[in-house]
Length: 162
Image (tube, rainbow, N blue to C red; front, top):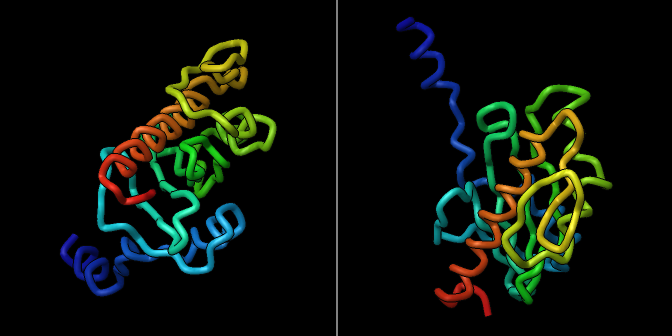
């Protein structure tokens, strides 16, 4: 066990300040070319990425789906407070069921939403249609979007974005 701890300590690389894996999606969606990791933290948000032009804001959120920490998504919110896109970073759910939440058809339901959302069998203005056999994973993505929407409101109130 001691050797395992020693190896971990000398090989561990802290990536908490690394946003390189998020910047391509942020640039594509927000049209920015220079992003920074915000020092402001929000409950449930893993990372907050802000562009120089502040056309919107991106939140990386990790939530529980079927597996604890199984849903890791980038939720990009435009300057009007509506979801611009939800981009999967890592979906560690059951293959062929929960992993289906990374499909464009499912994720497109979130685009344009600016209010608290729930999941159910049928989509509506405030409800996302859950995938059959993947309701926990569907709820996990919805929880991530709700966390990002709340964080956006907090960022707006704090003057982090205009």
